[in-house]
Image (cartoon, rainbow over all chains, first blue to last red; front, side):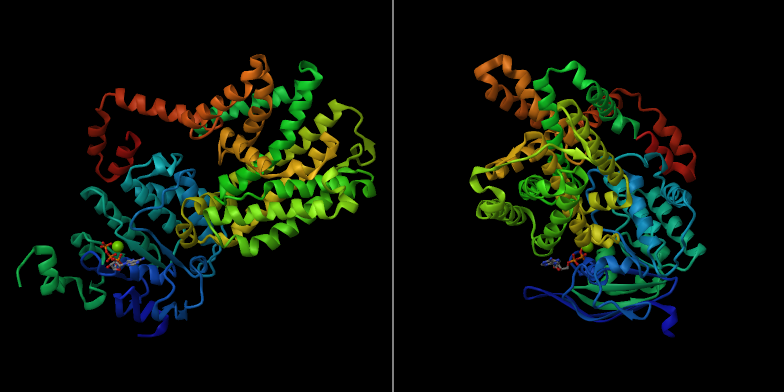
Length: 251
Length: 342
Ligand SMILES: Nc1ncnc2c1ncn2[C@@H]1O[C@H](COP(=O)(O)OP(=O)(O)OP(=O)(O)O)[C@@H](O)[C@H]1O
Ligand SMILES: [Mg+2]
C-alpha cells in the first residue's frame, strides 16, 4: 500500500498498566476514506488504543503514523491541526457551554488545520455547525447547556464537535451506546454522508455489532490486549471468538 | 440564550443605571463604599477569570493587588500619579511576575496550586516589608491624588466615576472573553482538561493566559484601591483579601461575567445596609452568605438560569405528553423532532 493512501498506521503498540498488558504488539493500517471497526470484549484495550493514538496516553511502545508522519513527539492538541478528531466513551461534562459553543470549539480546531485549511467567510461557521447539528438531530437543542442534555444527546454533541473539525481521521469510542435503533441508523447515515462528501477515515469502537458490520470496511478484533483477527465484515461472524462473545456459543 | 442571560442581563442594566445615579442618590459614605466595591470588583473579576472560567484555584490575587497598590505608592510620586502611567507600570510588572510564576506553578492542580500561589502572595507581602526604604515597610505609605492625563481627579464623585469607567472597560473585556473562542476553550478546560486537549485546545498556554490576565486585573484594581484609600500597608494584602475576592466571585456567580460586580456590591455594601442590626451585623451577614451559597449554586448572577431551569422542569412535568408520537411519524427527522419536545 502506498503511504499516501494510508491515513493512519499503527505498528507494535504495547501498553502496560502495573503488571497487566492492556495492549500487546497491536498494529493495523487504515486506508484513507475507509472505516475500521474495532471490537472486543470489555477491557480488551479498545479505549486504551484510542488513547494512545490521540496521545492522551503517552507511554506506549510502538510506532504511530498519521498521514505518514510519526506523532511520537506531539501533544493531543497538535493532532487536531493534523486532521485527527476523536470522541469519548463518556462525554465530557461541560457545565457552562451550550451545544453550539461546543461545536464552535471543534470548528476552531479544524480552522487551524494544516490539512484542509479552509478559511471560510465569517458566518459560514454557523452554517457548517447548523448542518452538523441538523444531521445529528440536535438543531433544536443548540442553545441548551451541554450538561442539561440526556446522555445520548451529549454523546451526539461530542460527535458533532469532532465532525466540525472536518477531520481526515475520526476515532469514535462507542458512539452508539445509549442510542435507540432509529438513532443508530441515523448515526450510520451521518458517517456515510460525510464519507461520500470527502475522504474521512474512521476507527469505530462499538459493541453494537450490527452497526459495526454496517459501516466498516475492515474489522479488527481485540481480546486481552491482543489483536486476534483482522478481517472483512462479512467474515467476522465466522470467527469463533466473536461467535462466543456475541452469540453466546460454547466452544 | 435569552432565558440563560435574562435575569443577569436585567440585573446588569439595573446596576449600570444605579452606578451612574449613585453620587446623587447616595450619602458620601455610601458613595465611598460603592467606590470601594468597584475597586474590589477587579479582584473578583480576576478570581472569576482564573477560577470561574478555566478552573485554576489561585490564592495569588492579594499579591498582585499589592503589586498594583504599591505601584501607586512607589511609582506614583515619580510619575505624577498619572493613572495611565502607574497602571501601565503595574500591568507590566504584574504580567511579568505572573508569567514567571505560571511556568512552574500551573503544572500543579487543586490544593497544591492553591498553596503554591498562596506562597507567592506571602512572598510579595514579605518583600514589601523588607524594602521599607521605598515602601514604608510595616508602617505603610500614603498615596497622592490621582490624575488622569494631567487632569487632577478633584473629589470623591469624580474619583468614583474614574473607577467606574475603568471597571466598565474591564467588565466589557471579560464579557467579550466569555463569548470568544478562547473563552469557550477555557470553559472546556475547566470541565475536562484531557477532553479539551483532544478538542484542539492548548490547555497549558490558555491557563497561562488566564492567569496573567487575572493578575493584570488585580494589579489595575490595586492601583485604584491605592488612590481610593490613600494609604497602603502590607497587612491590607493578606490572605483575607484573597478570600474576600473568592467570596465575591462565588456569591456573585462563578463563571458568569456579571458575577464579580454583583458579588463585590454584596460583600461591601450589604454589611453597611445591615448596620441597623448593630451588634448582629456579622451573624446576619454570615447567615446571608450561607443562604446564597446553599440556595444559589450559580451565585446571584446564576439565578436567572436557575429559575429558568426550574420553570422548564415544572412545565415539562405539567405538559401533556402527546407531541412525542407525532414526531415519530416523520421518520428521517425523528431525532430532531423528538429532541425538540424533549
Ligand atoms: N488508567 C488505567 N490504569 C490502569 N489500568 C487501566 C487504565 N486504563 C485501562 N486500564 C485497564 O486496561 C485494560 C483495557 O481497558 P480499556 O478501557 O482500554 O478497555 P475497553 O476495551 O475500552 O473496554 P470497554 O469495552 O469496557 O470500554 C482493562 O483491563 C483496564 O482495566
Ligand atoms: Mg472502552
